[in-house]
Length: 467
Ligand code: PLP
Image 1 (tube, helix red, strand yellow):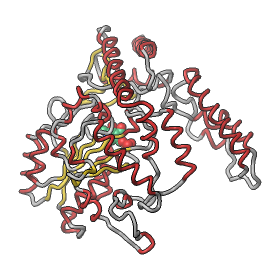
Image 2 (image 1 turned 135 degrees about the vertical axis):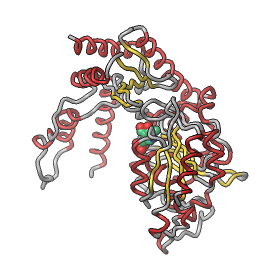
Image 3 (image 1 turned 60 degrees about the vertical axis):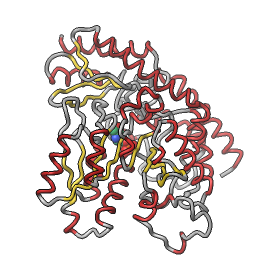
Image 4 (image 1 turned 120 degrees about the vertical axis):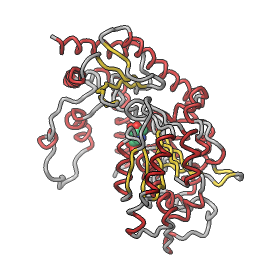
């Protein structure tokens, strides 16, 4: 409404946010509210008359904060990190102010052009092969999707379009089969459901990774049964244990069998900014598409998921809808990014990448990744020093999988006890039949004291459940 009021309250909000960051450790990482807590704090209908900024600001602590799970908290060790950096936050102020859905070059030229340049910057940063980049020598290109789930679903639809040429008669649909492992993220299963195709799990090896042999076997069996294998989603850095599927083994099989190979590196993809981690993606040149979330481990705020595909012509043509109101007379040589995603409108997400990469530099991002890998190994040492506990999977990234020696039940009890107190937040996973606990380094400035705090808390609850 009033520009002076906007200036006053936006500055006040920045101060509030800065203070939140500085004092976050005074808050419990997990909220204490019960389901439905908000209905007693908010009226059932929107106000008739306008309210004042001041009352809204006062309500933040009273109404909103009690229901916040603090993902930026140093004691948040659940799931995988969700990035949060100052450059990203500030960039999004401008993006929100511009509020432009850049679905074509003309609708927001800088959005398309900065996105293309950023996708090439990031491809170089993580050592992706030239074939995935926008360049004169390649037919590849990248696009920013919201989430890894979007990238999987979109590439699955592209692969489906490739084999069916968009002739989705039930006869063909019912024969299509896609593959992944039972360690793949839930989003892969959801993509199969959304696309209406069969999903077959390929057996993993003893390291919970796909390595090729079982893929060949299942393809042969499925072909004999009249099915059409068309898509494999491999994972680099699985959600449960950060296992890496073997692209060197999977790639040649997929290429030979004309199966689209998509790589979901949602979390671990950021780590390839450090050369010493790149052996985990050996064989990536054989993939059709590759995706990782900058909003997980590369310090760019949610949502920001980078997807590269090898053939931009295929993308441009697969779902091309061009009514007269979207036809453009200039910028036609640019990617029409609305064809590279499901919605028409799109956010100007490349600005926060540009701010973040410039303010950290390659060195800053590498230091961030290496520091988290170092801290995970330090936490592993703490676990190994206590003979009541065991490590359940090799520690390579920022994740430590551990458990108390003994039954699944005792570990379930331990998890419940830790969550009920809520001073730290970890989540469980299943590796085979084993119930394990996952400890992830998430906060950018985590230090050894934070780890000691967490480990003391875990040991305290281990003691509690045994008395
Ligand atoms: N893939 C993997 C391996 C993940 O670990 C996750 C989330 O943790 C996802 C996909 C889903 O990511 P998004 O929330 O961006 O869809």
